[in-house]
Length: 333
Image (cartoon, rainbow, N blue to C red; front, top):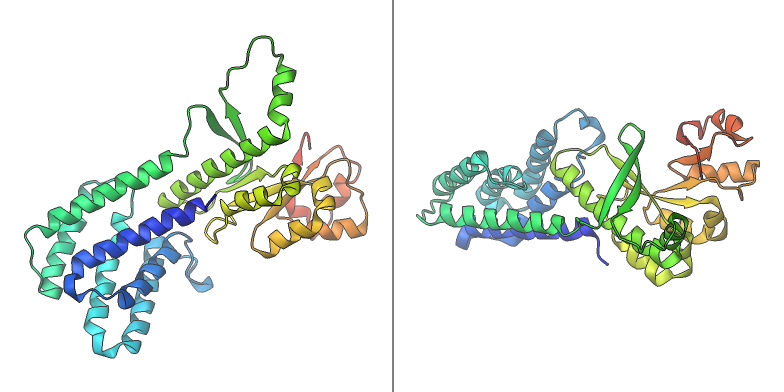
């Protein structure tokens, strides 16, 4: 399995590269255009520029990032300074084309690009505007189809909000079981290792698609918590394939993997390796959890700690200054 968002962003990068080839024609130089595309993607899909600019809108962050890239590129390519400055201008329009729809506003941007192309590059082509519009329209269609591939009439994600913009993820299915199966038997079937693992894969794919849609709506606040079954840790190849689904700096802090304490206790080394690789974990304290100072220190590794409020140690942990804000009360673990 591959990272869903990396697939999406690679396609977007290729689209931008194609548009710039169309715009600059024989003046196109990938060595000059790629740094601008990288800057745009990096900011557009993370909402991050630097700590001092948190209050800037996403569009202003992109604009400032592109300006900084332009300054650097001009200093490194003085003989191509005008060409670099032109690339900066055109890449600034791509924010309006990087959508899942083509409305009048996008059509106006394409007309503006055609006009600027003639003015800045002295390239005139009667077919250019129509051809660019067709390419953008086809690319939008392919983006939508890519994301819609993760939707299903059989499976659907259900979200339980545990805090503002933080959701526990479960998967609902419309699979019809024979009448002879009781509700208990059906639930036990769903909880079997192989079935549960397949459900986890479906959840991660669908949630990854949801995160991309959030980004496209300029929503970078939502975080999703997905249970990672213990059985995966006995199947390292299968787990590694699963992990690749969310192996991207853009999504690692949006999809949090949840393990039980029993799982962490047994596979502590592998879980901490994944943490060092950038993946973020939450933990559910089950009956195997032993309340002592050493185990409490381990709790600082986790983004959230799910505890049944009836546990005898719940109140004491809520008083611990290092972890109290990470604790989430749940009915069952």
